[in-house]
Amino acid sequence: MSLTRRMGLVETDRVESVLKNLDQSTIKITGISLFHLLTVGSIAASIALFVSGRKWASIFVGLWPPTFQALKSASER
Image (cartoon, rainbow, N blue to C red):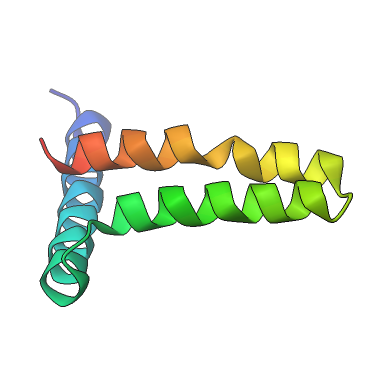
């Protein structure tokens, strides 16, 4: 395995470790996963933006929840 490939794996493991630690500490404090909070928050922000007439901003923010759920899935590995 090349050095670049090994470094990429190490960085991936480090990022996943940080995500998992953040999620676990948030669960200890709130009882709810960080990624679930971010998902609900972005949905609420998207609705608020839409109601205030900022359609394009609401669509942009509305695209975030699947990303947060993908990060949740990656942190659970």
